[in-house]
Length: 565
Image 1 (tube, rainbow, N blue to C red):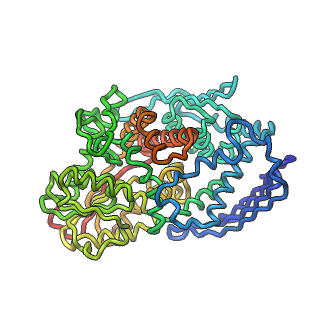
Image 2 (image 1 turned 180 degrees about the vertical axis):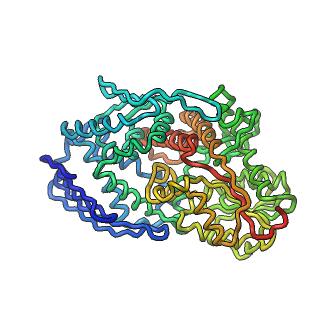
Image 3 (image 1 turned 135 degrees about the vertical axis):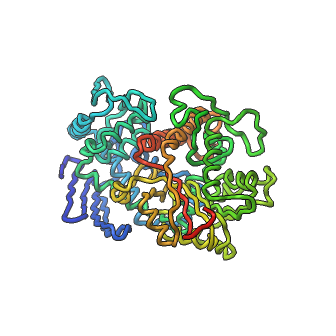
């Protein structure tokens, strides 16, 4: 593919194998990038060459973009993390940092070009692709024009049916170009920056998932280059010890008050399980349900009954405790303590002795406050340590090892080591490992493992899902056998909706003030991008779990001849 204007020249080519190269000239800046990659034993083998030549003065950019943001902002803003305690400690590398910035710069520059012929070509490409929609109705509005795609479709999940329909209003013509450069991130950036408004965001994602194969045509000749650069730059925070600490900090060290604004009273940040009293995992869609107000501080006295979300979280915690065969006197190791809900539950109600570890400094302080408030300091010890650096006293010391919603942060290249460490900590006889992990279907794993999606780029840097088959292979290598596997994924769709209800309701009164108090340099525009990013995350993930495109599995593992099962 190649095109040229007075200010822009772009040429791309896919050579034999997995090699891509791009030469781009934008207003005097020439960028040449060559990427060659292969996957060997689940690991990316990458060769890159990269050069930038600037031949014209920066003044030529004046007037290039219109709208409320400048060239230096736009996609670049959405890819910048709030600077938490450890986010800058990992060695990202000059090259990968420059590569990511160049990617955002190039996308913004191309999207901001006001050459009507380019915009028209991009618009025609997007609209033509959308004619392939068969399930669901999607309406696109731009200025005075409206386009309608698809056909009526009744989406039925667990006996609940709803028409699948949504309207996307395009507020800026640059969106067309963004979608052509990279459909997934182009839409995400456009939403976060307020360049599109959507009537039903989850419905849009469900339409995309149900018509995934037919909408793949939207990826143009240069899309693989941008996708590949995103994939490579995502490894800037690899899940080595220091990288993991930085990755976790980027999300979990934001603010305890922020998370209290959308989590239930017990502060459990993982999939709940909704019983019949809650109406099951679609109960909130059938009728309006009671939602408790946010917890103002750790020592606040309860003044209202548990709502569906809190009861669902407690049901999940009890399920894990039972799967792990925890009883009075059990020695329990929890990897990733969150805000302490599981450790507190099994110490208080099961009589267990718990060691729990975290690499989030903010969470450690909060957990210890919660434990002290519950009067359980004698039964629970919190360690600030990575799972690879556990003390020698943990060797074969535990009846049960538990991790809930943690393994998504491990990284597939470290999964074998993870299970070896779990086996190392488990008693040699009659011990159990119980964990939850979100998974992609085995049939889609190979494709997923070479891509970066919205959540991996914007929400959980360094995060990665696995598949059931790859997890089973890794645990067997560590000498552990699978006892049970169960899928609670549909409950995660409602969990995400419940979080979104609370996030939107409490944002102005609870979440935004706590965020600005902790990070006073944030502008109102920064806060609005943050708000839209999280709304996108909740809706994006809900659609995946609701349609079983993503699952959440509960596993129990043990050694051979466990007589306690």
